[in-house]
Image 1 (cartoon, helix red, strand yellow):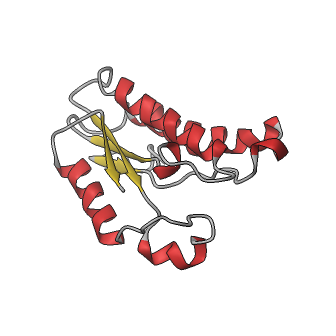
Image 2 (image 1 turned 90 degrees about the horizontal axis):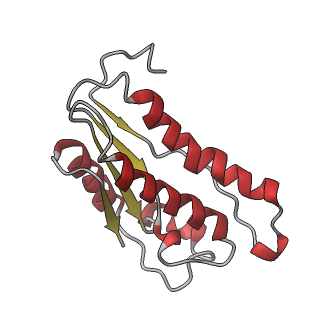
Length: 151
């Protein structure tokens, strides 16, 4: 990807699949989906991408509410989200050339709440517009190592 797009200023990642399974039913290979996709997928995007972004560029990764307000079957997702957050805080002090990194941690969003409400009982969805504004803040702002929580 980076060799095809050599003049990047900013990278936003909203990708990453996680396992939704009760801990009692989980096998190590089930958890690896969350590790490989949501956690390492985003981390590797930064590890490789730091060599391609323009000076002063930024990375914005995505975590989620499950790490702070768990739901049944969300253990694997919570672990991956927490790992991404820890990586962002640590990578911020190591990135070269003025590169920045932040994470967006949204609650369940209004546009998908109807489909997901059985998993998020008692949660108040947030607007997709508020989530989008957090991504804008991450890209155009000057902060680094932050997690913008939209709960």
